[in-house]
Image (cartoon, rainbow, N blue to C red; front, side, top):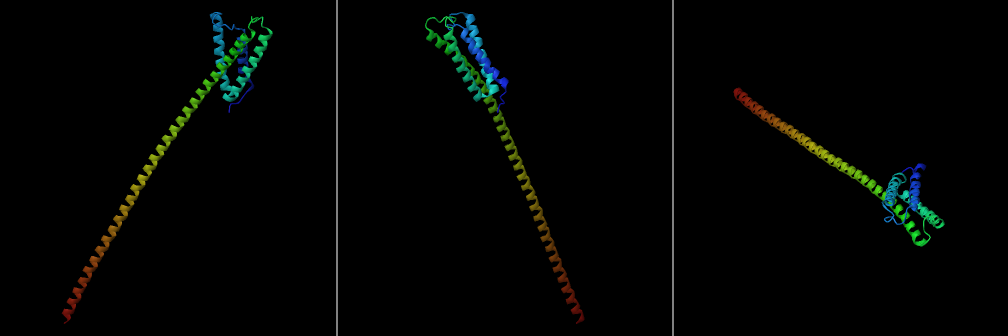
Length: 205
């Protein structure tokens, strides 16, 4: 959420001044000479810059409402100004048609400001989208690394389990072999004992 300071509303005020100043240009831009058209072009550039700054400072939604209010107010003031001072603006004839031209010009400068706001907002959204995409890529990399680490842990656990099973089997085999050796020695000892007993009995007879 953008903090809206009072100084930020200076930009809409400047836009209102620019739109109002366009009333003092001739409605016939191309026949009035290059100087008049150059001034009109500069006003258009300033309107675009104002829209850009309004989007940066007042956000797109609130700034759009402010720009719309500026356009409506400027059109209203322009209509009153041109109506009261029609002779100054050279509108003794065809007052309504020329007034419509003034109104359309004010609306056009406001539309250029809206275009500046829209372009600024698109670039901001694109930057946020790129940041979101980079975060998503980082998350995917972290997930892949975690999967690899988990796979390594599982493989290491399998190796340890196989080693434990091998050592346990080897211990069992050793115990079986020892048991077999002990049984063989006992049999040899018993057979030797029997022979000694038989030999002893035969000597007594």
